[in-house]
Amino acid sequence: MPECTETVGQGRTRCFEGVTSSKMTQGGIDGGGRATPTSDPHDATTAVLSTPDLLLDILRPLIDGDFMPVLCSLSLISKDFHRATSSDQFWREVCRQRWKGKWGYHARWERAVADYSRCLTVKQQRGTSKDTAADDEDTFWRERYFFEERDSTRDRISAEELSSLVFDFRFWIGEPTLVDGGRIVVESGLLRSVSTEIGFSDPSPCEERVAGISWTARGRLTGHPSPEPGIEWFLDERSNAMQWGYAPDLWPRGNVQRLKNWGWQIMNPNVCLRAIDPAPSSSEMDATKSGEEDGEGKCNNDLWRDLLDSLENVPLRNTPNVNGQPVTVNLPRMFIERYELVDETLMR
Image 1 (cartoon, rainbow, N blue to C red):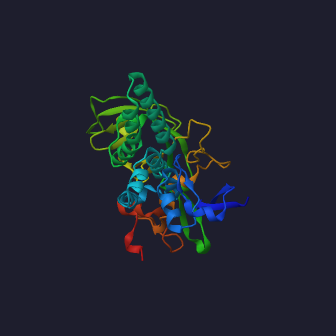
Image 2 (cartoon, rainbow, N blue to C red):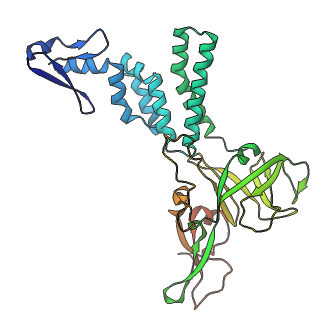
């Protein structure tokens, strides 16, 4: 008896032993919801599109959080597409694809998986009906997706959340280097991490004015490169203004910012700190490298890629010429636009 094959998507082939080619015209969907062989291309397409698992396999490579309007429009094509794009599996994959390119992916994914498991456990303990439980399960990942999207637009940080993060600490301006022609170029301090263990510990309400500002929280700063102990930090949760130092004499004021990749950044005219992406707690997930150090003590620069890619060599303000040429420094465009440390009259 000859063996017939049928391609069902993504290069996979199914074999149907004992089925002759003359019988292929009787294809369709069997009682188990599986596609059966057919010689009619239209029937074969219908068979695949009416099989939820196969349809999801076809859509999976297209799932990307940045193209949600397109994906959502697929639900209007047919009932089968609507069923596939409304399924729990579909939205779980949407969450994974969307989050894996964002800061905090591992922690965010693990929280969602844990919440999903707790949700199922609670339903089982309450004796929720099978149909209702299935409906709730199908909405969990969709609701979590939109919850995280809303949270990603939040630009305020609480003292508690701040204290849960660990930061990579870097100066804007690095060491000077003598180059050809006797010209001095100051390298970017962003190329080298000074500390990858900065923590804003022991948050507590701040009930007094410090350095002329009424802060809402204060605490102890740890991991700072300064050898002197006793550094305190101060945060205004209403404006994200932040400052640290040896009270009442604090270093320049800065602010906390939310980044496009959903991470957190703290910057002032001297330094920039970025929250290190938490590594996964599960051994089954890929370890993030954002906070790992290499053999030379440099922190992985992926965390800083956007700033490093925008470095420009510009003349420093109020700096005497050396060998008749201005001293220049490599700074990111964002810094140049924010702080007046650059002599723009010398810029071309």
